Image 1 (cartoon, rainbow, N blue to C red):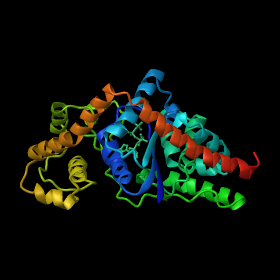
Image 2: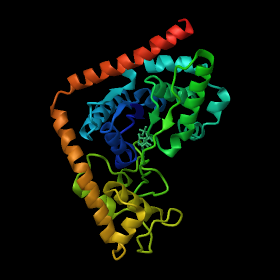
Image 3: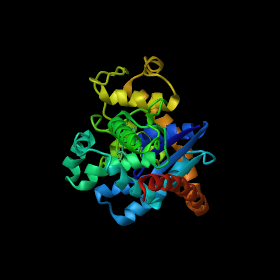
Image 4: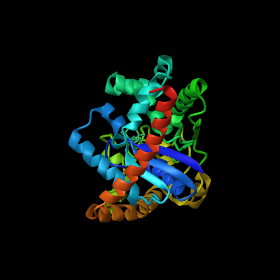
Length: 323
Ligand code: AQP
């Protein structure tokens, strides 16, 4: 049986990009024979210095959304990273198996240092990420291409540890499953749809109602061709809409182009809006239902399982290191 780990930051309201790029696949993985850990990686979000009340509420909201999205809790564990301090403990140990030069080469460090200022947290967070993956000995990690570099670093760290102390950690692989679409802003198709962006009209949030969704798609930026064709270099806006439609309906880009070959942009935008509203509505309804329910027992049981799994690894590592 595979052990899968993946995480989401509680940096804001969950959006369609998070669903189609990650959570939809997590739901799928939770229904096949895997042991899955889906983690709200709140310690990572500290690097952005969030407002404490907002952070607390985002953590709770994100955990509830994972349940509302349909993650099968029979073989999946959902929890907040900061509730399992073993993540941070292992991160300290692993930092002695990571080269400074490796961290300096991380492209996300360079990007984040520009926007967040260069503090040590954004320099060393890839080690915490390695710890997130290795704490449960995950061998499969469903991540997008932007995370390939971090996964390679995790493998390097695990390999160095294993070379010195024996076969402790598996070398994790990128999930073989289909990676989800990378959604772009509906208003600025050059930028990624993102939780922390101010671009609310370019982002579809999980709790947008149908009217709002339709309005956002209606005013989405495309081009003047009126030809529904996937072309990432010249038609970013329409390609993004094709990606969304294809991802929700399990179709290829070509199939979407064929289906809408006689349609105009206005018609296509409405069709995309309709299918997005249909996709998000049951998740939102379930979320509202969960808001009324007390899910503390579910959260507690999941957390205990996550702690037990992490503690096993820490005991083993402590013994091996002589701690
Ligand atoms: N636009 C996107 N398209 C496809 N997938 C996306 N993901 C995020 N944005 C898109 C995927 O969602 C998962 C959780 O993301 P994260 O919270 O760990 O970090 P992120 O990639 O930085 O997400 P955001 O929404 O853009 O948040 P902020 O604004 O805080 O940076 C990941 O698997 C990610 O690939």
